[in-house]
Length: 407
Picture 1 (cartoon, rainbow, N blue to C red):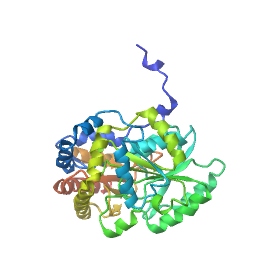
Picture 2 (tube, helix red, strand yellow):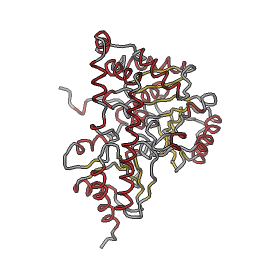
Picture 3 (cartoon, rainbow, N blue to C red):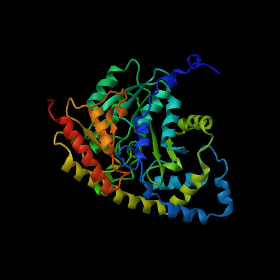
Picture 4 (cartoon, rainbow, N blue to C red):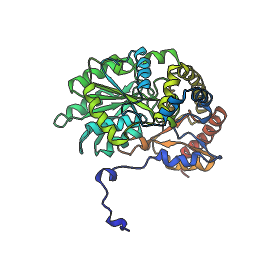
């Protein structure tokens, strides 16, 4: 057996750090813990009966197809159904190519593999989706996080950084404009317009992550979730990614990318080297769920449930949190992002909250530099209303205790 001190690990794996979310998931399975940690649907929400009906009514040859390997770009009927679905939403499906991926994280990972060389620079928002951070760092990229404000990425900070980095420009910028994970931000139309000339000036490609855009809570938010890929296809080079994880179930492991043809060719080669094809079985089911119209009906139901859970969390926060906390009410998605007052030890608050029966995720998880101790993320998607009320009460008490003057 090789001794551990003789193993020669790659530089790319040495740059990775564990996800605090994954580390906390074992707590979430404890019956005595109320979890605000995982960004996932509740098990009770999955369309089990609808999928049962779909599978039971499939012809034998289609069931057999589901057990087989499939083409690398995706199950052809699903590609056609998804293309029509996106076309109705104004997506430029005729001038771009669509690929099914094993979750949208694989789409992000593929694009990282296509573009990133070691020591390359990638611009992200700060905070940023932990999966994106991990994917980019796995290819040894340097990340520059640009702070978000209530309207989206801070344009002045972005301009300033891009001007400074002209000698070695970034490979691309990675953004989540719709119900950001973890910040919950929905970009304003004005902020999107301001972004375009900045990216044009610096010839900067955009990777647009839109896993939550279908989960809006009101009509105004619905009008604002139009992807940048739809709005500015002719002005910018945009690679768009999305997912079935939040609108059918994460266990399906299905996402997709919509990208220009020349990028698609490279992406297909990368996917072939990763897994050859995404699960054909779940692609068959997803195709029938989408083509039958059941998916749109299901999403409508989810919006109502998630809005109710969000409203419950907002009400409980107003009732139990210290007034020093800063937060914004989300218009869709899964998350609330809470800012602490200075000098609060978030790790002590987390430990006290776990001891009393509630868990959340601290801000440094989503900081490209892993430093932010002034925020935390709460997810309401996986928790029934009565549990939300109870858990926020626990967390509120812990925060109030942490704010008491030292004796």
